[in-house]
Image 1 (cartoon, rainbow, N blue to C red):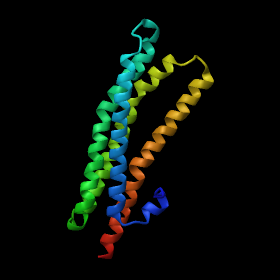
Image 2: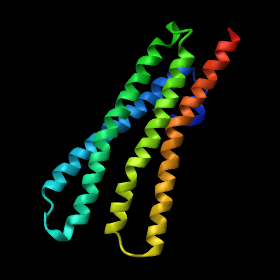
Image 3: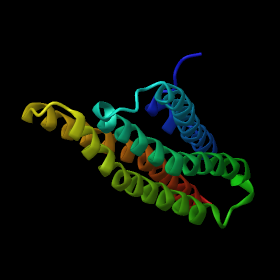
Image 4: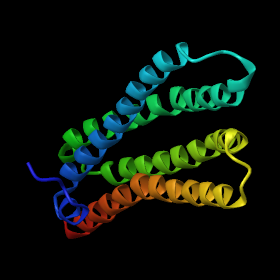
Amino acid sequence: MKPILSKELFKKEPKKIIRTVGLFYAGIGAWCFFGLTLMNSTMSNFPKDEEFEGFNRTFEILQNIWMTYMPLLIIIGFGMVAFSYALERLNEQRIAIQTGILIVCTIWVIAYSIASIPYLEAFLSISPEQEAFNGLTYIFALFGFGAVFALMTIPNYKVLKKLKAENTDM
């Protein structure tokens, strides 16, 4: 089975794009829960002394973020999958529903990014005090935000454009 490239994915019909992207979102959320399980088992064996306080606090913040936002990502993903199966029956509402999905995904990205700021600050507090390292950390954080923003909005925007084009063809 060859991997799906974005160019190939966007050539498919909207319901297949929505289904694939929804499963991807749900898979990412589930993978993060698996990571939480690993982190919890690792952290239970980690020393609780003062020397590791910053490290423990950083992982605690990450766990709180993921426990809040990954269930929402899984719900968004499965909601998209359900929508993809009902797409043909929803002639009138499908543009409104896809617009809603795009708005929810955009809100999720912004909220997740804002919630991640304390994690970034905690991570910087345990890192070496070197300006180059801090600069790279901010660059990677901005890249991460951009990547998540693109993955959450571009596919949904492309589907919305396709649905609008199909609606005008009818």
